[in-house]
Each structure stands twice: as structure tokens, then as C-alpha cells.
Length: 250
Image 1 (cartoon, one colour):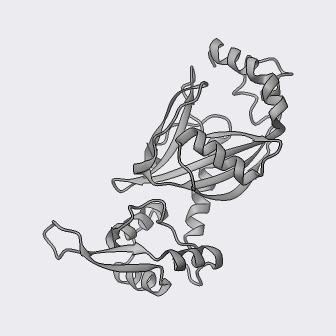
Image 2 (spheres, rainbow, N blue to C red):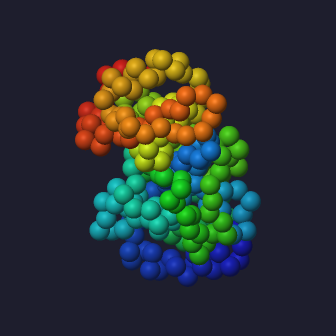
Image 3 (cartoon, rainbow, N blue to C red):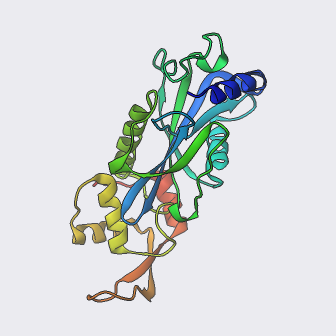
């Protein structure tokens, strides 16, 4: 970590102690979808070679979910993001190596328990924002993810596992696809998240049984085959499915 970053951290320690809870943080695994690739949003602290998940601290008068939403808005400018809390991370000395060189009694170097959230966002509307501690904030293909600091590799791996499990009983796609999409595009999204191929006919029948899609009288132009229809999500049924879940898995 550079001397300048160390100085910024030490300078901000006083007011951070006044505004934020000690020993509690939030880390967010932000997934996006673009060009048939699942993406993850990462930030890099100036002077570091490894990357990190967007994260931050919880204000004293702030709910955990509100804290995660605030952190993501500060890092991306995006509001109304779908967030799912999936695990708590609390290994002893999980942050010490990252803050090497900072005095041991500094607030940042103390033990922090982190609440993990994953977020699904519209890649096309998000413009990553770097903060005063970062020299970069950008999207990365999950298949080419760089190494992450501290225990962020573990947090990322568990978030992806949880997203795959959640596909079994929750709808996914609203925050990852464009407003209108083809059934093939939706199936491809599921295949990329699950990391396996799905039967086309079975996928179509299952999706239609869920009753979360509305077929449009509009087709996607171009290509050698019959133009496929566009679909949109039926928001009333989609939200019901988010609340109540599906009754069958992939």
C-alpha cells in the first residue's frame, strides 16, 4: 500500500470512528451480464496489484441493507439494486495483511466482521466510480477474475455458489438483461451462471410455467433463422416469485 494511501487512511481515522460502527463492514459481490459473459465489479487500491470487492463500513444510525445500498451507490451511482445477503465472514486477522505498515492500534487494522451481499445490476447503465483510495474500478469477466485481497476470493466464490443455488427457487434476469430479450438470451444467462448447458425445450416450458414472462408481438430482426420473439418480465408475477419462490429446481 502506498504512503499516500496510508496517509489518507490515517487522516480519515478520527472522523470515521465518529460516524461508523467499529468492527462491522459490508462487502458486495456485484454481478453484471454483457456480451454473453458474467461480469464482476472490482476495485483496486492505489499501489496494490490485487483487486478487491466494493465494500465499506456501516454508519451508526444505518440498517445493514441501507449500508450496502449506500456503498454501491457511492461506487457505481446505481440505485434500487437487487441485493441478497448470503453470509457473514469473521476469520481472525482477516484484514491485517492488507493494512501492513499501518500501526496496529489504528481503527482500520482491527478485526472486522464483514456481511456479504451479492448484487445483480444492469451492466449497460452502470459506470464504476473509483474513490480516493483506488486507482481503478472496473468490470472483469468471471472466467478471468484477477486475484483478490484478504479473504475476498472466498467471499466471491461463496457469492457465486449462492447465486447458483438461488436460481433453483428465485427468478433471475430482471437486473441483468435488457428490458426486452429473447428466450435464447434468457437461457444463455442461466447457462452461464450455472456453468452448464440446458435443454432448450425444457427451459422454455419451465419458464412459461413460472408465469413471470410476457411474450411481445415483436421479434428480433436479423440472423439466418426465424426471428425470435421478444419477452419482458411480468413485474407483478416476478415480485411474487421473489417473495414466495419457485417449487422446482434446475
